[in-house]
Length: 324
Image (cartoon, rainbow, N blue to C red; front, side, top):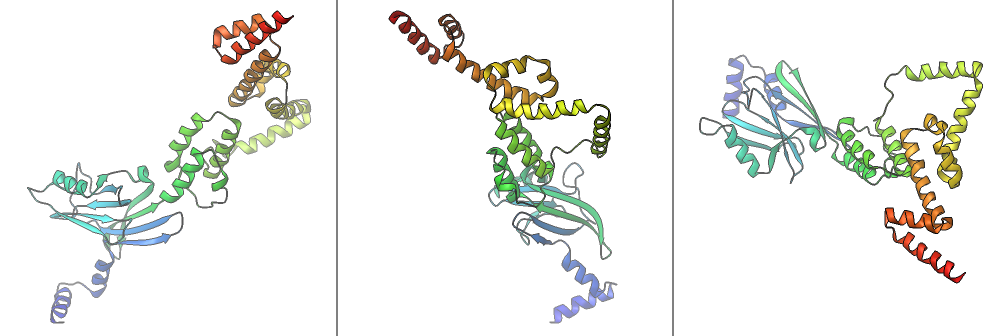
């Protein structure tokens, strides 16, 4: 009790108030702001006076531990390094700093514990650092959000081309965390179902928003003009939209092949739509050739593709000719 009284007396004599003591009990600590099923929000105020540069002028660095799934921030006050954990609030690691124990010594010790320098975005976090005065104390305010759980759900949906699991999710996922992953699997998509699933996911994440907000208005004005002056054009556009589904699902080979050869298909279809129809056309062409192709046509095709189906069909045709 005597020690506490002496400490309080010294602070009062030196011009510090009890409010000042309370402030220093609140800063340099990580607090949980939000803890939901998909997002965890942490906030901390770190005193920024008397901080030394850590490396190349930087006064803070982020570290990540894969084993403990821990994002932390490193600061360098006076004669030590302090690593503050966000994922496990209250956990700190202090490392001695002097002439013999510098930056690389600190990195070595942290590596042994599983920590590596990182960018928060690369491990499923976002971090925002700003300068603030917290009750007259100059601080860094750091807001860290953990999106790892939500990111895992979206990655699975994209990877499996299945949008069912994310339909009812309302929590927003920052684009910077998912956009590269989405682009990777979009480039690998080949079927109409895959593109449709990715479209649902992209709309949910707002990944493919219009370039400007004025575009919808301009479209509406253009449609009104077309309604008055050239209604035939709109009929063609509606027919083209319907015909794509028809040619993708129902059109026979001869009709589909004729449509793809016409200028109309190239003017009305997107690049993806044209390729989808071209794939179906190739498939129907193969079926048609195997069913009704002549012996010469089958032999020519087999020389090019070496497909066993054609060889079997050729042998069957030869047998039929011999029987006749």
